[in-house]
Length: 399
Ligand code: ASP
Image 1 (cartoon, protein in one colour):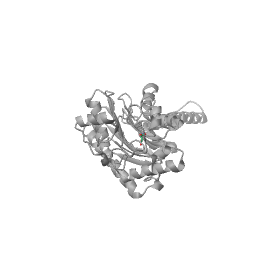
Image 2 (image 1 turned 180 degrees about the vertical axis):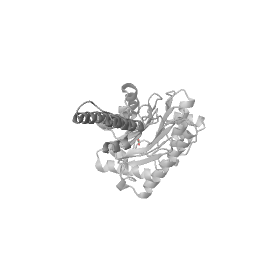
Image 3 (image 1 turned 30 degrees about the vertical axis):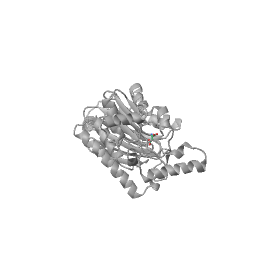
Image 4 (image 1 turned 120 degrees about the vertical axis):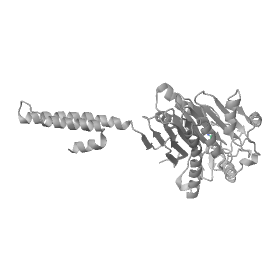
């Protein structure tokens, strides 16, 4: 009876009925043998049937929706069901520690993450495209001084702001990217215009700015991008360079607001009701960058990738390593050529490949069934996701 109790909680009704019928028929069977051997046979058959049913029940459980926090990140996997639509965002990964956060700052980050993702969620819910959801969601983060994208972008060594962005359409494999612009208010809009209205994939510097003007995009005076926090970050990075005299690459990422190394790029990946995937990424790059340095964010395959056959990915982290590792495309390729799930592919690329290369950062991604991955090898990553039921998950730190 104790067995039946367990089954009551873990098995389907049909299995419970089957087990009950089996037990009843065995109970009333009259075999032509000794009472002991009948009893033994009844017990063996019952035990055998019980094992078969329990194993069956366990397998059923594994196909149900799973929500789990791994050490490395947050994976939401509803492998059995295809979601109607799905969206996930990041606002940068790095050494983001709770002990360095004030409750006010944490609340401010959470509020803007929620505002951003709800923008994209509403578009998707109303039947809009994943490309529009990605663009408009990123616009909200670009307009917030909290993130290293648009307003709030980090400073170069020359005390300027040079912004990079990219977007990709998973249906057509079209893509657009802009690099090193200084006066385009929302670089993700420029990336989108390059994809939609030009024969090219990537434009840089003055040429990209000229194109933005022709497209009627909003241009701003470069001082628009100024924030005290980011300017102080540059000063600190320069001081550290002089004091330490060791040109440690990490000093380029020092951010006094978090009191540690951190990145702050923003990105979004989405699946729409038509089954189309899209991803986009926007950034100011890294503090104290020089010589026209361009990171992974505008590189299709490194910072951004989308393909309806597999997934859509946006990266954040130490750009040089994401370029060498072709991180975003690598996740898609593992799914396409090796048949890995989004969860497996993301983990392999971030925790194994990127980490072995010496790179730090993370990705957010969504596959063509609406499963979401938020994988990172840093202490934290600003992140949020919403499913088609309107359930919102926001995270900052590694659990
Ligand atoms: N990946 C960006 C870059 O290297 C930085 C970031 O993610 O914050 O330019």
